Image (cartoon, helix red, strand yellow):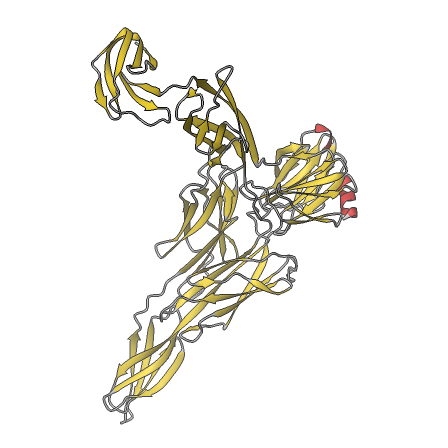
Length: 592
């Protein structure tokens, strides 16, 4: 690792990570505040002295420039292969309740990838279990065919992620498995006749017709076979051949997988959609006409990619977290599948306070909500005041006014903090004095707590409730990795952007003297409406009021709901709604 870091520093003003650039983007440091440019990649600022470099599609190297400095960065190789096999190779419904699936994740050189994470598996139809280790780079799983006695094709996709938020996989593979069905074919013939049935080139029987002329032949019917041939030999030695319609409708098969399965609803994050199609005979079809559409985000054209696989690019919408998306993929008119994509919110950005009424009477409790939203406006939760406070937003839906005030204003501190998560989707690394500080975040910007990190120096650490872990600084550069492929490089003087997981705000609430009632009045076009509430905000229907107008003509008062209303005939000025019993009033300005 020390030699790799020395090579990074040798680039002069451009500091590269000690590994090839990820095809989905990597941080690069630039000294001296110089802007970074690139050939074969897109660049975007990512912090103080940091740039995110995203190689162009299929790029193998990127040439970087900053001022007079130049550097060439290699790009990680394209996805390798996952070899998939089934045991038995030709499973039969009615005999094989499960099918053993063996997977080998291979590296670019074709050898088993001993550092590959567990593959993600999807199957259609039926169910495939989560993989379990079976040796270096090898995994095993169990496939369960659907119930019934109908032959079918099972399509299975496997993807080994490059990192938790990387659309480009580390390795990928797919297979179509023919699932035959064991059935008994009934028939009738002259007693003593021997009948043989040929299905898909395989002969079954012969079966002899009983005294009533009936017989049954056990068959194994592979998928895609619609007809069979019956060969009968009667007791007199006469041979006949009959074509049989098995009345089985073969189905094409389509299976798709989106990765990452969850994305921030930020309008920029992307996932890759991978699809595998097979015809009714379990033959893979790399040019099957596929079309995809998304309910909320956008998805590009599905195009042939490598081998039998096809792929498309999905982009998350800007906003709409919590309302998961679905990418629907159609194979002409013969098959369709829906691939879920979870949309998650981002870091907390702002706190909005809404009070049921303001000014708030001294000592009163009124309904309130302090909503917390991310930069796109998606709701994250509710803020509250500090613990043990005697006034303010003591719980998420009630505001308690102080009993006394010198200036009829109350400054209420509000705070919100995302709860910790457990899986690190992203990592950042910064130098702080003689320590390197790693920050781990989940896909929805929560601090990832309890994650075991490994620093390039060899030191290990576990993240705390803030998602932080540290290691002693032994030089001007460092790296850190997490399970699942999240990684980060750090350079002294380069400060990455770390998503906030907490937000605070102080709001000013207007106060008024306490009173036994409150008059709530509002204009609704050219109508004034009102109601009288008690000190706790409960309506007091039937309460008598007096309307005092200046500069406007007000029609007669009439009951409306829990209060009343009156039409404004003409003019502009003010209208006061006065509770006759207490004299408490609300004054409204009426425009022309």
